[in-house]
Length: 212
Length: 212
Image (cartoon, rainbow over all chains, first blue to last red; front, side, top):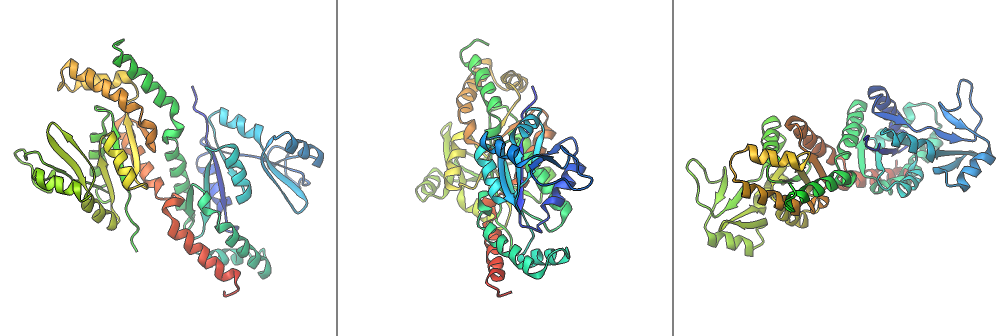
């Protein structure tokens, strides 16, 4: 019997490097980790394929999924819906795969409500200064956008303690190994081994009763 | 600033191999793990040194420690007291050392009350049959003693879910690595990183307030 996979949610400040950590995990451990694919109502960009980057769908279909509770979490950004289809994640879990989700803070807490056994990891750079430097270094945002991201980061920082683990991303390779170590260790949690506990209790009972 | 060490308690069925796991951890990672030394009122055996195998003391001194709450846990076996001196463990923790304690189930739960942040690991063989085989293989116990140990194991199995992690000891080297992985991963728990969380909150607040 294959044991069920683990849901791991990665959140973190914009610029903390969670996307890079995800990418490394999928590349270095391709048989262990699988990425959940989001559904979205935004138009596919050139080169994007349905079922690879996203499940592309109409707003009506997406709202149908919301009504039917078919999404683990969803949010609207810039007029487009983004969400995590429950079915797809369930299928992977049933196959014993560890599913990685990269979701922002509110979505992560929605997932935890549906899967209390989900593992919530939060990624942060070692300091706010380093966070700012990374945002500046990306050269994609104007100074006022960067300040707004830092302000959002401040708000998000008050939800850090809702997460199970905190990854301080100083060196990417270290951070990747930390996440891998954590997911590995979590498999041994008693809460995830109730079947093994019951098995031992039943077997030991046979000896106590003198059946063996 | 050195971070405080972690208390890890190892319990498990008699014959599960927890002593062997301990020994391997101390040998393979001598800079990482440190063994707590118990206090006892039993007479030293030839070759045993005070402060190495045990802190040997009189019954009056031991009972004094009980009264002064100087013990993390204690129990009486065969007319002799055994217990874990709090001071000694505290000193090692303050030095940032990871302290390993090998204690039976009741003692482990006493420690968890005093240190809610202590990590509780339970070691079991893969099956009750294997447990029995190991007890028989040791050739130290009579059949009725073995049955009594299995009966105690049955009772203890109902406290397994009070533990944080369950180690199934099939291959000793795997079990040692599992314990090491778990202790490693636990360092990243948000509950153990409150200082880092507060640091980020304070630093990000500076940016939000426009001080930086």
